[in-house]
Image 1 (cartoon, helix red, strand yellow):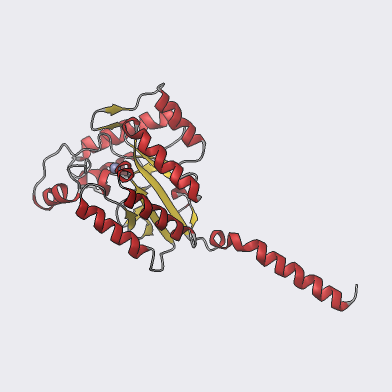
Image 2 (cartoon, rainbow, N blue to C red):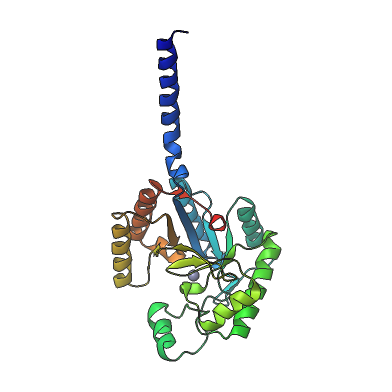
Length: 268
Ligand SMILES: [Zn+2]
């Protein structure tokens, strides 16, 4: 082969190589999107299906699932039920399963700053904000045992309802050896205390018009600024009640997926 042909063959190979690589650039940059569906349980299966299908259509096949063992004391997950079978299949299919409280609802009483937080930030859904360490530990142990029995593998971690942790919850996380937890601002390892990712979670609120509007504004802003290396996006069953929220979720996911490949919490 002449030198000229060798050079042209080498160039061709390089060019084809870089073209073939283009779809994997997001993958190679190690920028990650951690997507999650909250409040998974028998009482919200229809909304779950809608959100799951929407994620899958946009290329996020296995979002993390935050599972509530007995939502509001009205929707217990029991081994051997069709829902339990489905949860097992989802875990087998690659979804990371997080324990997400026990009842989700806040049944405690609070004082001072905690009372303000409980009333204004959670609509009474901050179950782990006011729990003492003993009760928090009992609910984490029971919830983890239930879910692990059903899915046949360890849970990936624990996320407190409304991302709110009181002192008791922090103590309980250490005592139970939970390896991953997250709040609005970070993902951390409760055993070592190491912070694994630091960025606000992009999420939507459906409860009031004002909250819907502000979550739409935040999501729109997130689509316009450069994103951190690890971005988090979380959706809730109530989001399916608003076409505007669903449109914003899709637009934000699409925008994030241009630069961030779907990732797993356990790879942090
Ligand atoms: Zn929740």
